[in-house]
Amino acid sequence: MDFQCDIVKVSGKDALATYQGLKTRTDVIPVILGDNDDLKSIAETMNYVTDSFSQLLQQALSIDPLEWFNKRQAQDSEYYDLTAGAWQDLSPSTDISVHLDVLTGEPKPEVHIALVPVEKSWMIPAFLKIGGWNDCPTAAEHAAIFKYWDECYGITVAGITADVIELEVQRPPTTREQALQLAEQQFIYCPDIVYQGTETIAALASTLINGSVWFFWWD
Image (cartoon, rainbow, N blue to C red; front, side, top):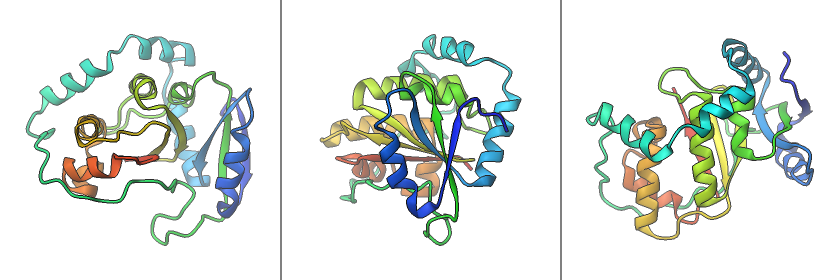
């Protein structure tokens, strides 16, 4: 598997400490890629996408994220139903979980951390060519949306597995209005986090207020 970047292998229990330590480097940006199965799945997607990193970046820069959200929602307004539901006071999301076993919650025996040679974290989806399966956005769409969210909230791509992306957030929303607007965007970007997660957009929004980690999952 040629990821065209260095890969560090660590135990799951040491993954977060290693990841945090690698973030001090200025020549690369670390991102946790999960275990061997995740690595193989990501590699298969990379081999399937024929566009180069620079081509994907150009595509990303040509996408207007707000227009993308509006267009995607309008294409199927019943599926992307923006009814918020009743507000719930849920705890903010603060923990990275890509290094954990989804069933047991325990650290995986081994995970991989890619040292991606890009200038900005939002470029990582384009470098790793992730996405494009089922309802999952394409690599260029991920990058365009992450660039927009980075400008608004200060995000860093922390983890990518076969079907999960986790982002660290420096400036999360602090009000219900801000959180609901963001939750609508996240729901359109990744419906499963509502339909198979929080169940309502309002519940998702409550976890975004002062939340330092965003979780996305595509079935």
